[in-house]
Image 1: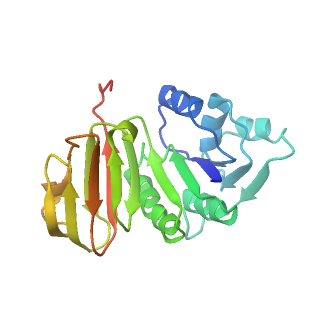
Image 2: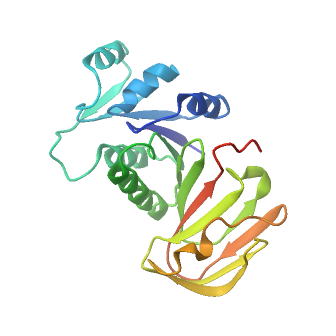
Length: 223
């Protein structure tokens, strides 16, 4: 499995990021604009840097220009894609099968929502892609999944329709089970929020549509 880390310019809990990176290894690293500043603090030298560089300091840019192997992808501020979306597209060309986004959830909500939507291109290429922060792991599903307590991000699992409608949702091994339930975007929002596993494993199945899955933990969670 060829993996890629994308460090974006959103708010990032550095203590969490250091702990996360201690347990993970990546074949390629892409820094996105102000994500370059986070990379410097984390001691990461990226393979690629993507962005219009309107939110990163000149000093940090000059620091990383000392590394001749870094590939710089400079884009104009006036463009249809976000910098994170451009980084995502670059990761697809690198034939990565797993992509993790750091710094993609904190800060401006418009950027966070854009980053969630950028996951769809990954899903369409069969790539395991997720946005992670200290409390959450977000990803899209177009088919069922088995959840294991040992590998969950926290105590809670929530499902929200990403497509307008998701049909035939069945939840087994969850505190709040479902049997072939249809979900419409914007309706019964709380039905699949903050579910929990009752045992070591639980199973999600559904017939059509795309779900946004959020694995999450409370701020003071220590499990």
